[in-house]
Length: 110
Image (cartoon, rainbow, N blue to C red):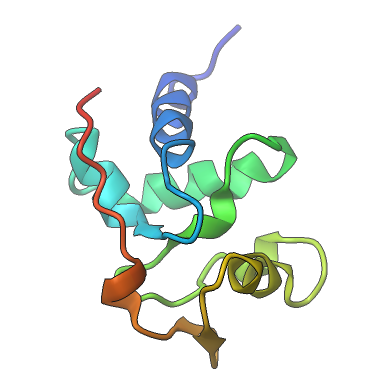
């Protein structure tokens, strides 16, 4: 039996899978491209639930200011930051340096 959020979560994951290596996007940008601009928090819930999905790069989704607000959902104290840094993204005090340079705007419509 599926839950009401299952389809939305799958749509979120489809967008997240498109985020290029070395780029990030925001919860709000994903919500907007899905036609649910006011659902950034639900996108966050989807990312929190994605920790067991190896093909969903949840570490590439941050808040609108480039803060690693979801980092406590990753195993280890700095895993989210380490994953981003392994892709060439500099993180200082839990915030992406040059956020605009690394930001990827989803363009697909679902």
